[in-house]
Length: 264
Image: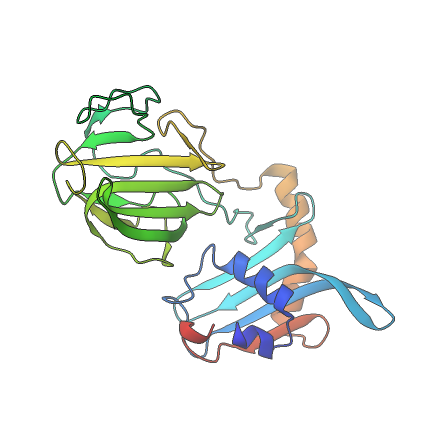
């Protein structure tokens, strides 16, 4: 953030850039001193002052990652130059391999330990302690904690707005605030908390409501195709040219990252 502000971006513009880049870039893990970025902005000028600035394009050149994204005026979303969306696909299962479903989503379930009617807001898979659990989609770790009933657990908020929860873990492999990618190991399954045996309890939350993870409609990665892609790339040409030219001033804000992620 300091590097962006030093380049002349306002706090609002810094927030826009951060929200876009963090979908692909882990600022704590992936940024290095000397990384460079350029931001192309559009804004209304009234009496010499800038209002309602909008990010049109971002180019990040780093030691660990290069990324260029451009706004598509047709849907106001950002894509790479070849038309790939920033929003990734979402996997149905948070693990590799095949395991037995021991208990499905059931809002009227009788709890196996207490015998009382207790909604089961997730899906359980019987699996050996220590089975790797992976992120079903890109996102950020919202919580890593312990609970007498849930045991060791992890909560991830994904880029599309969904959240996922993983209960009864033996070990978390991530920390709060970590950026995770689809397929990345986030934990090892276990038998902690109130549990009848080694298993993973997995929840998907949409609009603050737990849904059936096996039936909920999952977002798919969107890529532009056909005439829509051609129109986007035609629109992107002058933006890419401006970024390549390194033009400074009112068109492109640019800077070198001043330090590692602690400052960015």
